[in-house]
Length: 223
Image (cartoon, helix red, strand yellow):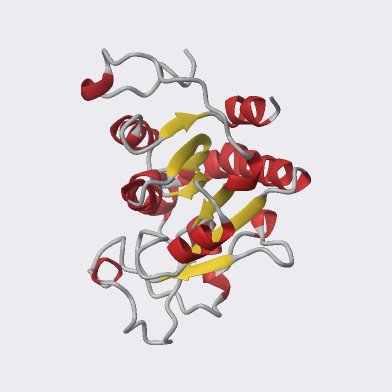
């Protein structure tokens, strides 16, 4: 099964195959979302640590290596690599969106200078690469990323990062609403569980984005 037939929801299970993709390098950028130190930390609670171990295995074994390889391919081709991370601008986090202040797992107090808020070393921005700091899920909402992409002449955004069903999905929808062409690279993304990851890809695929593997994307870029 290839990208034209994979990850189809009820709405698109009988839809015709999409046309071949053609990506102008000058109009295409890669955007990596929220692969930050905090999400790779192991909890002091052994039950919680075990619960999140499959996610960390996917991140270390698949997502981070595949994302790094894709970043390097974009850089080698002279294409833009952009980074987004979630962090608050004020130490007390008053500038965070409501979704980041609610109690529970999604509560985040990540001051922008803290080690926990930094992008993991393997995917660290290179000198001169744009880094967006956001205080909500979507990398477009509440930042100047929309203006930056427009000024750069970018129409195609290749999305990687975490979490598939939260910040990645929110960014995909925001970009699609602004009429950008969006590609989500499935092996460069992860959710809390593989099931959540797959289901969210089915939900957003074909209506808000196209879901491809990194190998499929590199083949398209190489044409």
